[in-house]
Structures are given as C-alpha cells and as structure tokens.
Length: 229
Image (cartoon, rainbow, N blue to C red; front, side, top):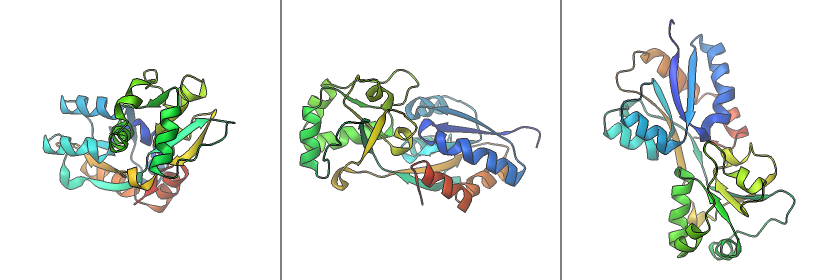
C-alpha cells in the first residue's frame, strides 16, 4: 500500500491503540497513521471536512457524523465498552461510593471536582442531574489543561476527585482509582470504528476494524481499561 490508513481516534482509546496499531501493521502488512484528539473537537472537525479513513471513538460522537454523511454507518464496528470511574490522590483513604447517596455525600464534601468535556464528562453531568446536585458540582469544577488527562489535576492537588473513563485514569501517576460510579448512575460508552464516507482504503479499513475484535486486540483492550464486546 502506497499510503497509510489514516485513523482518527479519541484520546480515550490512545493507550490501547498505541499497542494495537503496530501489532495490526505486523499482522496485516498495512500501515496506519493515527491522530488523537478530544471527542467533541474531533467530531466538530470531521463534520467540517477533516479527512481520514477510520474514526475510532464512542458512538455518541460517531452517530451524528453518520447522520451527517461524513461516516459510513454500515461499516460501524463496535469493539469495546467503558464505564465512568472515579479517582483520588494516591495514598489517601478511598471513599465509599458504593451507592448513589454515598457518592453524593462525598462529592458535596469535595473542595474541587475535575471532569472532562468529553463523553465521560457528559455522562457524569447527567448522573449529577439525577442526584440533584449538578449546579453544586459545576460550581467547583476544575478543568484540566489543554491536552491533559483529568487525573493530572488531582495528582498535583488542584482537585480532590477526578471522574473519567478507566482507560484515561490508568496512565496517570499519583492517583488511585476508587472504582466505577454506582450502577444506577452508569451509562455504558460503546466504542466503535467507522469508515469515513468516500475512503479509498476499503480493504484496509475492514482489516483494521476486524482486527480490533481479534483476541490479541481484546487482550490489549482489557489491559488498558476497556471491556471488549
């Protein structure tokens, strides 16, 4: 192949694709070029004409792009799911967040809460609305720096708690994952790979999307905090 398959992926899949992409290249003979970004930013860029061959990310972003004709819906291949998790600074006692009421009490007592503008943040805000404390939590939100993972805000002591997907909390040093939000507040995020409409790499795109569901890829996904489907 003269040109690589251009893969556009959300940051939440970066750790997994860092290992999966080179293994796919060795197994298939195709070359890939992967670009990462925040989900909302990538979705806007793709909608406005950003070129590529395969988009990798939660369906909350790929769905509207399929409706707009930028991605080919028939190609969408679900390969993983993720929960929303909570982390605190390493070394401190982990709070009990086993029930919605216990989570609510902990968050109201926290001085600073950090969450993203991506899919995990969208789901977290919905959870806070269910608990009736969305305004209180929004008032003490501490955002991460551009391109930074949410856990870093807690690691340096600027916030007491970080809420993001496990795959984005695990790479951050200095924090400890407490666990997922209570089941009643969870909204699973389904990850898929979808070909761009008009991509010229049909065979390569399909090979990559099929590889994401292979056993070697599933092993990497589990290790990186994503649940294969």
